[in-house]
Image (cartoon, rainbow, N blue to C red):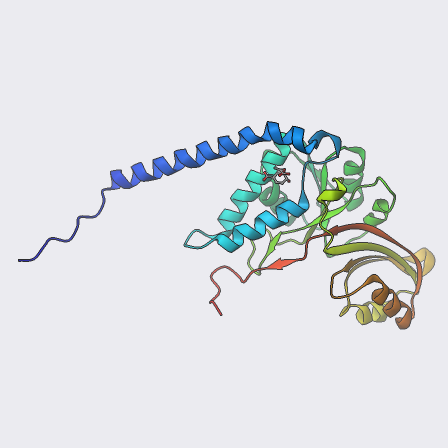
Length: 283
Ligand SMILES: C=C(O[C@@H]1C=C(C(=O)O)C=C[C@H]1O)C(=O)O
C-alpha cells in the first residue's frame, strides 16, 4: 500500500508565516529604536559632532557579510542595514549628507541613498570644496566626495585642528558588482575614540610633480593628485596602509625627484574590505 506524499502547504499558510515574520522584524526594529534614548545619554552623542561611529559601522557591516548566506542577495541585506544604521544615527543626532556632484550626479546620489537612505537629508553641491565647507559650518553633518579623483585639493581644508576629517571610505563592503560602487570618502567631525586608524590619509604638498613621479609612486600608495601651478607641484592626498609608511612614501617622492613642502594627517579609515562578486563561483 503506497502512502500519499504530504500535501504542499497552502498559499494562505505561507502568507501567514510571512506576515508573522514581518511583524517580528517590525517589532524588533521598534525595540532597537527604544534603545536610542539610553544610548544618547551613555554615548553623550550631543557633545561630539556626529553620532556616526565609523569603527563600529565598518565592524558591523563586516559581521553582516560574514554571517550572511542563502538566496537573499547580499546587496539587499547590505542596503537594508545601511538604512537601519544611518537612520538610527540620524535619530540620535540629526545630520545632513552633503554630496559633491561635480564628477557625476547619478553614481554619487546612488552612493548617498544606498548608504544613508532617504530619511537623512541630502544636500547637493557642485564642488568637493563646497560639500566640505557645508560640513565645516555644521556640527555633525557628513560630506561625500570622490575617493579617486578631484579637481581641487579639498583635503587641504582638513589640515587644521578642529577641522572635519576623512572618517570612512565607502562602500564598507567592496565587490566588483556592488550596486553603489563609487569609491567615496566620508568627511565629518567625530569623537577621536570612534575613528578607525587602519588606513591613514595624509595631505602632502610637493614641488616638482609630474606624471613620471606619479607612476613611480603608484605601486607604493593610492594617491589623489591635483596640480598646483604656482609651485610647479601638486597637492596630494595619500593613503598610508599597514603595508607602507609615510616615511617610505616621502623617501620615494624625493628619490623620484619631487621635494616635500608640507604634510598633515587629514583623517583615517578602515582597511578596505573586499568580497567576491555576488554569485561568483566559490573557490
Ligand atoms: C547606535 C550607535 O550609533 C550609530 C548607529 C549605529 C546603529 O544603528 O547600529 C551604529 C553606529 C553609530 O554610527 C552606536 O554608536 O552604537
